[in-house]
Every structure is written in structure tokens, then in C-alpha cells.
Amino acid sequence: MMTPKVSLLMVLGILWSLSATAQDTLTVMSYNIYHGEQAYEEGKGNLDDVSALIREVDPDFVALQEVDEMTGRLAALNNGKAFSLVDSLAKLTDMTGYFGKAINYEGGSYGEGLLSKKPLKSQKVMLPIPKGGEKRAALYVEGETSSGQPFIFAGTHLCHQYEENRLAQAGAVNSHFEDEKNVLIAGDFNFTPDSDSYRAIQKQWLDAAVIYNQPPEMTYSFEHPERRIDYLFLSKKSNWEVLDVKAIKRDYSDHLPLVARVVIHPTD
Figure (cartoon, rainbow, N blue to C red):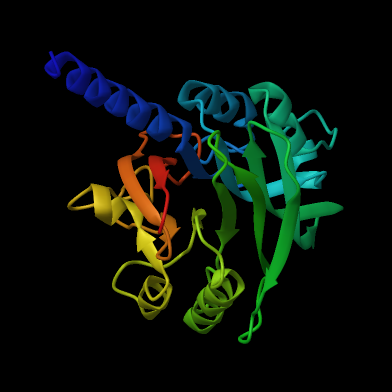
């Protein structure tokens, strides 16, 4: 007569475990959107295509790189009228948008963007450029899973010009988040896995694509995908499960969008 009780407890335990996993699963996306222009059709905007893709993926968070804000370059794609790329994407995807300015550009700004399903408070960190060149930033939000586990989602775009800058920026990212748990940082890091900058990041972060895929998919360029420079990194001080990582074959930008599903498990 005891067997049914034991079986019921086992079933309840499995159902509880599955429920907890579902609550703590995040779908995240990273996409360098080529300042809102079709990379292979000069003069044509990619806003509608990018927003449709985001709706299709249905992520909890999106990290956007090469984001224009009220620039002349955007205005040229919109009958001469400047607009906010992040705000427009947020409206079209029914998400909340955040913009982190890195530089002034053509009467507006250029930098990082984030989208989230729920409204959260964003923070920006400027990254070092010891070699000079274009200023760079990291943008992040803090939230909680449905079960109440805190986490941070961040996006960044490291220097495309100098390895010295990328090394310094990787070190700054490590330092800023070194005391935090459950941190996901996504973006265009402009380094390949054989670089010193990648090795510097690996001191503190796990490469989600390496955990899931062997070998990981290339992310650049769309026409000739032979380099991996877009990543999702997970903080080592946390207990992660990587369910899926994929690069989506769409030609709206010169980069492939990267999408991942991860579970945040409780740590001791």
C-alpha cells in the first residue's frame, strides 16, 4: 500500500523540478543591427525585419549593438526624419527599450541598446580606450526570475580597432561584475576565440556556445560566416544549464543574430 504514495511523491517532485526550471529559464538574443540599415541593400532600413525577427524569437532580453539614436544616418532611411531606433524596436516588439550612448554621431547618438519584456532600471558603464579611438560602453539591467532569483543581463560592443583596447575593456567588464552572480553578458566583442582578449574574458566567464555546441557556429559575416565574434558569456560564480545556442541565418545585418536559452539553477 506504500508504493502509490512513494510514486505520487516522486511525480510531484519531478513536476516541481520542471516548474522551477521553467520559471528560471531565460531566452536571450544578441544582434549587431548595423545602425538600422540593411547591410546588403544600401539606403534601406532594417527596422521592420529586425522587429519581426525579435517577435518570432520571443526573447526575454535582447542586446543590440551599432544602435543609432536620432542621427542623420537614421533620418536618411526615414524620409529625412530622425527617430529613436531603440524606442521604435520596443514599440514594434511590445518590449521595454533602453539606450546607452557611447558617442555623439551625426546630430544624435550611437551606442548600445537593450530590450526587455518587463520594465527594469538600466545602468551604463563606459569602457576604457587606452589606445584611443571610438568610445565604448556596456549597458545592463537587473531583474529576477519568476521564482525570485536575481540576475543581471548586460550588452556590450568592444573596440573594433585595437587589441589593446579590447584587452582593457575585457578587464573592465570582469572588474565591474566580479562580485555578482547570475550575470549574462551578450554582444559583439570583436575578438575571436584564439585572441588574448577572449582568454581574458574566460577568466571570469563561461562561453555559452562552447558549452552547447562543438564546434560553435560562426556569427560574422552573413555572406561568409567564418568568424565568431558575437557571444553570450555566463558568470562562473553561478549554476547554469545551457539548453540551446544558435546563430540565425538572416541577412538584415552583416552579423548573424545569436539566440540562447539558459537556466539559472540555485547555488549553494
